[in-house]
Each structure stands twice: as structure tokens, then as C-alpha cells.
Length: 392
View (cartoon, rainbow, N blue to C red):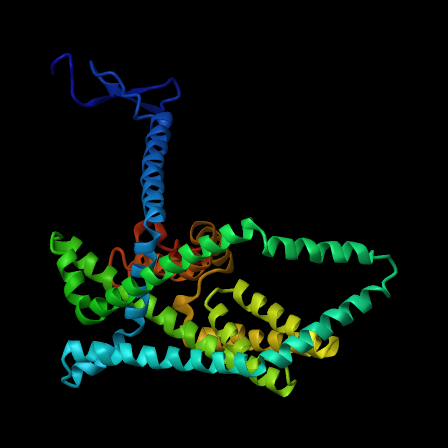
């Protein structure tokens, strides 16, 4: 054997324990010990974080494009069963897409028509009741144990009036006009993108995964199917739960004769797409309207109705309609909502949870139809290990 051997040598201590050393004539690498492994992992984490931040910053610069495309993808995933049913009936993809879009327009247009008519019919009465309610709040403030200066209240009202007539409010209005223009641009893009996703969604995905081969191709197919299934199941389940919430709360508001019951019900439906936070905000708004128009007793009853409906939804409807596989831990939902709100505002909050659910679903099929990624696999508990050893 030569002096410089390519195989590692082994020596023994005085107590007989073997110690592995570097190969003769070959120095040990700095990256092979514990600190080297830590440095390698840290460098990998930094590279991944930099790429993720770059992608997020790039998407934030293109929100007018990214958000409509994501919304179109989620809506198209929810409509996939309907499109499949129409295709199986022999309807061409173009006509099936047009029928699906018309169904969306009729549903959304009907809801909008009901809301606008309700607001228009009750606006005068609501305005008078709001003025009376505001005056009653002022009168109630005089009965508090601490003194509230009337001049200070008048000063606050004057400051608000001055702001509404100031140049600063005008610049804010111009910014609002720009936001409306961006919204309309995004809406048109979303409708066009939705049309092509509905019509040629499977063909588009097949085109994107052409470069993959073998097991990577199979994984790409699984990822696509899982993402579409997760988006669709989440949106359909959330819409069903939101509809039940809106109907239940609207019936309660109608029984209590709260003004704007239908618009408030529509608001409950929209805000229900923001988990946890949306239901709370909707309940607060409904209670405030009841407080201003019908008094404290009606507001308390509204709060009781909202809490009861939310408990029914959270404990029974959501697990039944959305399934246990779609259920994310409350902590993960809160973190996703926070990140989504910081990055994309209200739209980001709405998209955060379905995107998180889709990512987790993809991880669950990464190594096979029912095999999660290696690092995400559940480790057997101590009891399971003991049972396995006992069985052997």
C-alpha cells in the first residue's frame, strides 16, 4: 500500500475505542465537521431566503398582474367540476366557459342588485336614525361619571369637516381614483385570464411541465392536481360556509328589524372569506348599526346572533363542508393572515389562507400520491415503536 492512501485510517485509544481519522496524506476538510455542516446549512438557508425575498418583492411590484392571475386561478379551480360536467355532456370548451362565466355574472350581479336596492330604499330612514342615534350617544356621554367637554367634541367635528374640504383630502381622492383605475385594470385582466384558465387550463399546465421527465414529471402532475383540488375545495367550502353565515345573520337582523339587513348580510358573506378576522369585523359592524339605529338592547341581540352563527359554522359546518384535510392549525392561519395583510392588504389576507393550504397540500403529495416530503412525514411515537417491537 502506498504512503498516500485514499481510504481513511482508524486508530484506537488506550481504552480500545476506535477513532476515525482523515485519510493518510489527505487533510480533513473544514466543511466535514460540525461547524462546516452548520455553515453549509446556514448558507443554503440564506440563499433560499434571498430568492424568496426577491420573488416576493418582484410580485409586489406587479400586484396588478399577480393578484388577478391568482384570483382567476382560484376561481377556475372552484369551477373545475362544473367545467368537467359540461364537457362530459358534449359541450365544447368555449361554450362551457361562456356558460360558467354567465353563471358567475348572474350570481354576483343578483347579489349586487339586491344590495344596491336595499341601500337606496332605506337610505333616508337610515340617515335620520343615524342622526338620532348620534345625538343619543352625545346625551348618554353627559351621564358618564367623568366630564366630556362639549367644546372638544365640536372641535373634533370641525377638524373632520376641515379635513374633508382640505387639499389633503383632495389628494387622497385623486389617489382613490388611481386605485379605482388599477382595480378596473386588474378586473379586466382577471376576467380574461379566467376565461383562458377555464377553457384551456389542463392544456396550459401540460405545456408548462413539458421539460420534466420521469419521476419529476409525475411529481409535477401530482402538484398540479393537488393545487387545483385544494384551491377549488377551499373556495367552494368557504363560499358555502359564508352563505350560511350571511343567511343566518340576515334572518336575525330582519327579525330584529335592523336597517340595511341585506347589505350587512352581503358584507358578512364577503368578510367570511377572511378567516377569524372577517367574522369579528362583520359582527362589530352589524352591532354598531343596531346600536345607532335600534339602541343598546338590539346591539346585544345582534352580538348574540353573530356569536351563535359563528360557533355553528366553526364547529359543524366548516369541518363537514371543507373536510379535515383542508383544516389548517389556527396558529398557521394567523401567521398566514398577518403576512398576507402586510404584503397585500385585504386581498392578501383573502389569498393567504388558500395559498398556504395549497402549499401544504403539495407537500403532502411531494414523494407520492399519499406520501409527503421526507422532512414532513410523521415520525412514529414512542408507543407505536413499542407496539412494533412487541409485534416482532
